[in-house]
Amino acid sequence: LIIITAAAIGKQSIWIIVFLIAILGWAGTARVIRSQTLSLRERPFVEAARVAGASDTRIIFKHIAPNVLPLTTLYLTLGIPGVIITEAAISFLGLGDPSKVSWGMMLQWAFTTGNTYNPYWLFPPGLCITLMALAFYLIGRGMEEIINPRLREI
Image 1: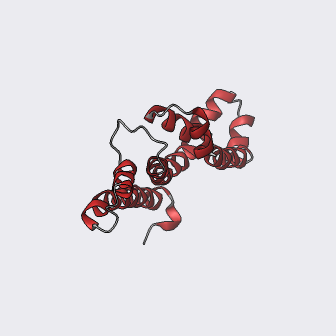
Image 2: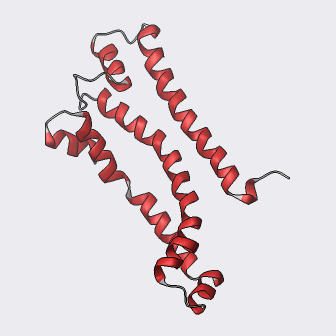
C-alpha cells in the first residue's frame, strides 16, 4: 500500500516517504495499546481508585499510563527496523528521493549500473541495514527484559 501510494503521488521526497510510513504503519501498534488500555481499565486497582473518588484524569495519568508506556516504547523500538527496511525497499524500487543518499538508493545504484556481482557495492549498504535493524531489535529485547518481570532471570 505504501508503494502504491508513493507511486500515485509521483513527487519523490524523503518526507513524503516518512509521512506515508507513519500514516500507514500505526494501526497495529494502536490496536495493541488500545487492547492493553481496555484491559487495564477493568483491573482491580483501577476500580479501587475509581471507588476512592479519583478523577478520570488522575486514573489515566497515575494508573493506566505508567502501565501502557513501557509497552508503547517496546513497540516503538521493535517497529523501527521495519521502518528502516521499508524505506530501503522503497528507495531500492526507485520511489525514493534520488537527491538524497540512502542505503536503499545505494543498492539501487549498484543494481542499475550492473554492479550486482561486485560485493563491495552491495556489502556496505546491506550490512548497514542489517546491523541497524539488529541494533534496534536488540535494544527492544533488552528493554522488554527490563520492563517485563517474567523475563528477568533470578
